[in-house]
Length: 101
Image (cartoon, rainbow, N blue to C red; front, top):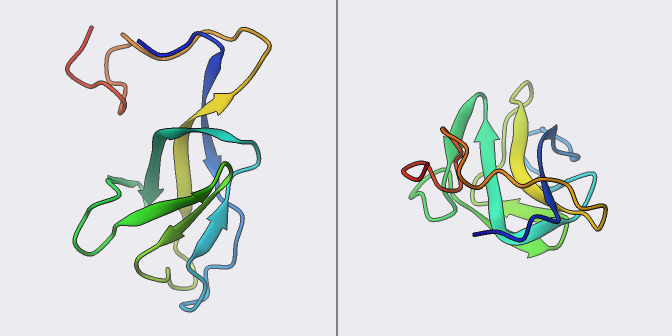
């Protein structure tokens, strides 16, 4: 179970969607391994053959493919937060543990 000091967020990622840029940032740091990329409304895993991505730093990722102009790149992630926020573990429909309730 995740540390309850993490808070779930869905954010549009910072970075140009111009067919060239592949690096994007979250507005706050995320917990390593606890981020899912949402590309035009579809959630993708890091190891996806075409739409994959990798974590670069605590607040940045690099996509395997550069999004085109007009694409919307978002992320659902667990934010590093020392304020004691409740995590999303055990919540029905969580992309981090979809089969657990």
